[in-house]
Length: 443
Image 1 (cartoon, rainbow, N blue to C red):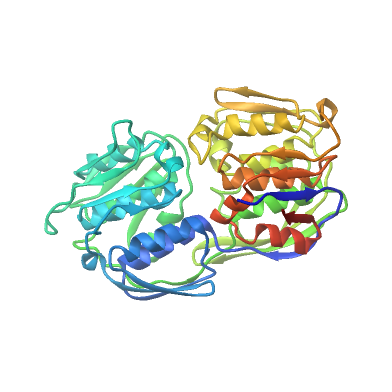
Image 2: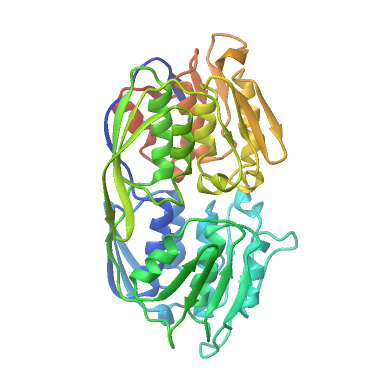
């Protein structure tokens, strides 16, 4: 795979419209595949992780077509799904695997869900136990990881209404259980240990299901059968993709950018709160609602940042954005502290160990803790030499983008090895930086 070279010093200027939200793209196509009728989804994210979902659905007989970023799905209802002929390859996408497990449990058809070596190291027992509580016959490999096997059941046999306490605050696990609950014979009550993103609840409500939320408890009331109408929606821009551009503008002197149509669901915008607490100038304009999701335009200006501490509930609200946060923290005055973030070790890479290792390569003063890390600002840096610094994203698309962003304000060029992994979630990332004025190129 090719390396991405980043030359520091060029301010970022201009406007950006982001690709569709990754989390909502996954849910939209899956619900469209479960629906009866033709669904149309605009601004669908076309990337490695969503391609995994599309190909898996095709393996179950679901027909779809892409026209640019418009996805059309010809749904025939979940009862028309057929058992796949072989294991469904979820590639590197845990979202694909976990959400599919829930939908397949609702359908009652047998299937094996597998993926890359990176996906096989991610914990899946947290998914299996809540589904089993509903009566799903499901098992993992010996280590509690993928591949996952769903044994299937007669179509006429429903799952059980139940009260389930989820082991972790995970939108993926919660969504899988909610999807499976569509085939339950009574209400399913889910208790979360902490807040998590609520896209699935919003979408199911929009499709006519009663989903009650009270604090950390979500209750789904299934119908007598699974009947979903087709979807017609345009997806907001992905805040997790916006995160890297926000940080890039904040840390690169002279920068001023506007990001249009960004999803601003409060369960996703913890990074924005953290960056504002650090002194970042991030203004929101034209707040509105699109397809049941809050959306707005962000105006970001370069800002001298000061260190901050992050722990508790804020961690869940920015769990995917810690690589971007690290790029901001290394440019902030003082030492930033992250705790209660042990879940980062179960992402595409061990994001605690990987971040600390690669920032250390850049000469940034950073220390690792079991549940987080500390990153000191430029006053504590010890860059080893002025020549280009070569860093490794460890097969993690978000770490690759974070290291590239860090290079925009680093005193020497930064070369990110194997940067093609960025296409997993934001294929146009490098070109977007280039249009804004950054000096980035693939070797």
